[in-house]
Image 1 (tube, helix red, strand yellow):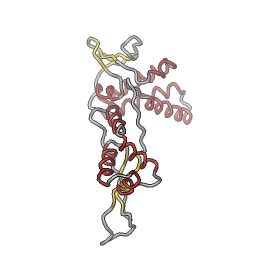
Image 2 (cartoon, one colour):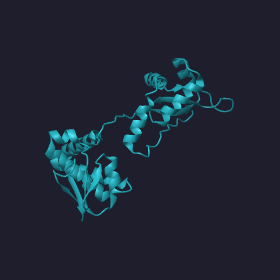
Image 3 (cartoon, one colour):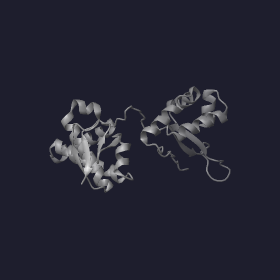
Image 4 (cartoon, helix red, strand yellow):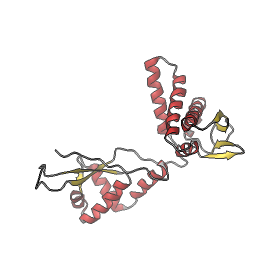
Length: 229
């Protein structure tokens, strides 16, 4: 039996928000949107020929739009022999397309409610399992998450940019131009500010940059100030 290979594109050089915007713009073309909808409604991965027939397009036109959707991460591809036969004479594997499992959304300014939800859900689960007070679990998990983000980024500044903090200079300090959890912070300021500061402290540790991260409610668009250690 042939192995199925799933191909996913890398994130855009502009970061997750730019990559998402590119994906959504790809659906602005009405023909491409129709191609996407046909594949998305399919119960099985679809070939170029099947999509072309369903959309009343030439095979080359269907292939063009399918490849663009795959490049932008809205579809994923598989290679499989449709005949079910193997060995010599079985024919070349066909390229099949199906809807990607990822969710895409763009917010202006950048918000990261999914990240906050992951931190809070993990903290609640671990608090229930270990008996650790929930508030302490939130701070700990936020710090651990920040460390991972810091390790995965070339610098602390880049880690903060990717998460939508919009870091900017304030004299010799750095403050944030945006709070990625703005709506949550407005409703639960104490909890979310603690999450914020522990996330950034963790990112600083993960990046290896020596600095001090403090709560400063009057600093910029967020509650965080970073200063030299």
